[in-house]
Image (spheres, rainbow, N blue to C red):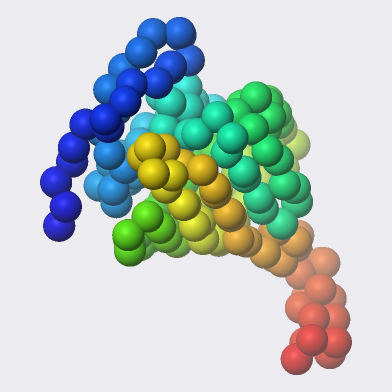
Length: 164
């Protein structure tokens, strides 16, 4: 296992201070994500932003955004919409500059019951040690439709009929 090393160059954190951050590895990612998604309600990404490159590209089944400003705005929108947001990392692995993790994210919205979404994330680490690309994979509609009592059965029947 690699040891955590200081990054060779400082970079700006959210409050305009500079800081030496620990190199991202699976242990640091697990630690950061566990602080982001907690059991006390809304997520807080502020401590994780310094680990993202200014030209980060984030993509999931819903959207593709580029740049730190857009990424922060995305996180803010998600926090506003959710009453609570929790994540459990099921597994995590690293090969060179790529970190992969499987997770369950449970979201709770105002008038709806908690909904678990099962997914995976691929993080690509830039040569400066920060996340340059994040790709999230999940079946948004299937996981949400599973939580709707009368619609679940019809949705699964449709999927089997048309897609195997």
